[in-house]
Length: 181
Image 1 (cartoon, rainbow, N blue to C red):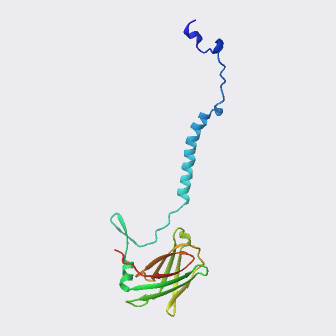
Image 2 (cartoon, rainbow, N blue to C red; image 1 turned 120 degrees about the vertical axis):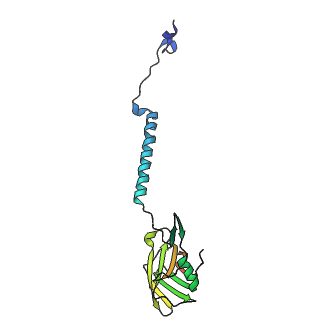
Image 3 (cartoon, rainbow, N blue to C red; image 1 turned 135 degrees about the vertical axis):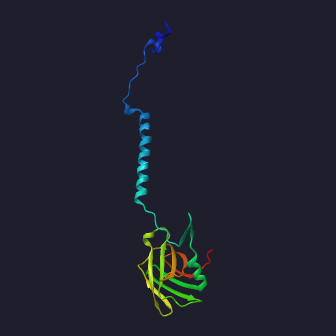
């Protein structure tokens, strides 16, 4: 017998029976289809996240010099020069705000603003215009949630500012200016 005559024959000279399966029953086909399909789905999910979420605006004083951006220390340094200090009492349950301001140099401001900024949720941020009542400045806002809050006290003309932060829904802060280089 020639070598070619035995090709394709099994034991006892009988050719093995090979059954062809339909393409959808082959695991390799599904792997070839699934990998690109998963990449397309992941790309669409990433696109949806990018389009539906918006970046929050940075709320601080910055200045641009050429292509670099630096914190702008002018209002912080103005608070140092004026010798501004404040005691701030915040109550999240009632939304009541009380601020006692002391200035070593210069008159009391005509108006005072307190800005409450939530650390992670800009939709909770608040601006409270304070009214002078005796020796203190008083104001109220809607009740605010427990969380990490940034506080800024500034006069209406934004000549200087004091900043601080607290965690919780109520706080008593002693605020003093810090000299910024």
